[in-house]
Amino acid sequence: MVSAVFHDPSGAGLAGTPAAVSVSKPALAASVANLPSAKPAARLPAEPFDWRGLALRVLPPIFGAGLLIGIWALLTMNGGAFPTPAATWAEFAKLFSDPFYDNGPNDQGIGWNVLFSLERVALGFGLAALVGIPAGFVLGRFSFVNHMISPLISLLRPVSPLAWLPIGLLVFKAANPAAIWTIFICSIWPMIINTAVGVQRVPQDYLNVARVLNLSEWKVMTRILFPAVLPYMLTGVRLSVGTAWLVIVAAEMLTGGVGIGFWVWDEWNNLNVAHILIAIFVIGIVGLLLEQALMLIARRFSFDD
Image 1: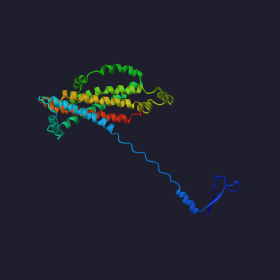
Image 2: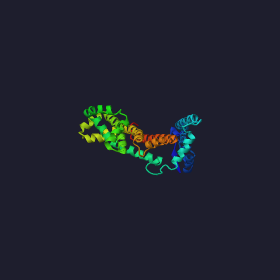
Image 3: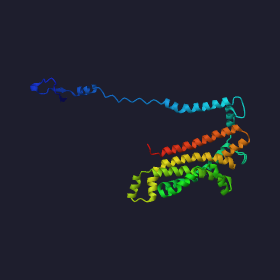
Image 4: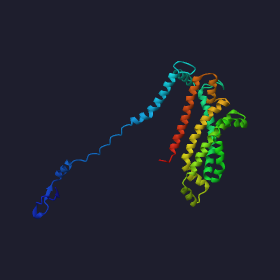
């Protein structure tokens, strides 16, 4: 037997004392078992998929492409030198059925031409990054150097890219290094300018703390300036790669050899307009992929969030 004492709310009992109630152990267990059990917390309903947001992202580009193709089809429905979308698509399928064929230096598939152009862009762009990014740090860090070099940059930056090509041909005596030189000199300016602006916008408090801690210039550059300037630097890199891809097509048209620019000019000499249109789309897609890749990298290293 288990005895439990309960207070009688009615006040009944001997001499106003609490009434003693004797409860057996099985009865107490049964009473506890009959108590209402706590219900598990209701699971929140899953958030529905945002079909509207997906449609707003996907449908407008599809409608835009459809509008372009529709206008193109209407303008070419009566024939003429300009090919129809169907004829261009047939040539596209034929070209990309074997994009990497090689019948000699003057007859290679469009895939090889794109790869050769990308190789030149990588070399010129890489050299520009090796020179331009450190130069931007120096210009942003030291005002005397900035005042000395900025007028030269302002003078040379608006020069047309193709105006640099004869200088490259004169110096290097060959078309391929001249094209790489042209890419280098045209893609270096955005990296210098954006990096210098990023260094100049670093809060002065950071540099004051570095001065109090007596940090070396190398540590100031690597520990304070580089993390703060990285978003600006990547913006300059993104702008530079777009300029480099734009310039290489024009440079290859003038220098010849193998490359997508030379391929476009060669197809024009053959009066193959369908291949020229295909090359335009290929150039645009490759440039878009390069820019999107660099934008992803820039977002990855952004500290704004």
